[in-house]
Image (cartoon, rainbow, N blue to C red):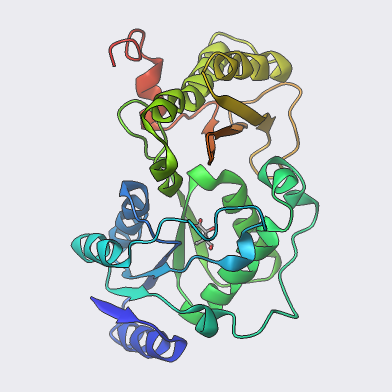
Amino acid sequence: MLIARTIAELRAAVREARARGRPIGFVPTMGALHEGHLSLVDRARERGAWVVLSIYVNPLQFGPAEDFQRYPRDFEGDCRLAEGRGVECVFAPSDAEMVPLPPAVTVVPRALADCLCGRHRPGHFEGVLTVVAKLFHIVEPDIAVFGQKDFHQSVLVRRMVRDLNFPIEIDVAPILRDSDGLARSSRNRYLGPDDRRAARSLSRALAAVVLAFRGGERRAERLRAEAQRVLASAVGVRTEYVEIVHPETLEAAERAAPEDVCAIAAHLGSARLIDNVILGAPDAGLVRLLVPGAEAAR
Ligand code: PAF
């Protein structure tokens, strides 16, 4: 596996792979890799792609009071995992390589970034889209794989690609969960044992919403109340938002439809966790929570 530290090295490697007829697959990450990231690599490989995985903790997407300094970093561990999963190239640029000057030109999303996470993390998605656009120009992938776990991010990346005509297919992979339902996240490393237990309330809240939806409830307010009830019963969980939105416009639903997404953000100790579910098509890990008694058995 090649480790490219500079844009020039990365471009030369991609050029060579493309000359050999391989489509280029791209998995952008901030490192601290876990099985969720590796499932994105699998998706790119299933398409026969030569896979580039970037590891860059992007300072542009963290607010001043956020966890940029202590964001988990484990470059050697990440490289081992990436190589074990068949990544051909890790792109790990320095700040000087990626953002040599404070940017004078950025990608600024419009109203689509004003809800959900965007409402609570001002400037976050400008930082994300700016760095994703730069990475897209550097890697020039045919396909890029993102996770449904970062639902709001995936919607904005799709819109950026469509609105700004990037010739890239965006694939969004389902959420991967631990056996107790907790969505895999690099930030789960912040959770102590008590918080780890309480963190299950996010997926349980989503399971309660799906059960109510399957039972015929369509009033979004009632469905949201279901989630809030479960979150409120978990010790130490401070709910930031529970919303039910259209999967593309992100408009809040009054009456929920199968394609709508219920999205949650909550704070637990020093961790901010997010999770979501497509009401009519829950991911496999969430479906496991819907089986009566499955949760109690853990
Ligand atoms: O999802 C992430 O890890 C980051 O937001 C991304 C897409 C790598 C941009 O920094």
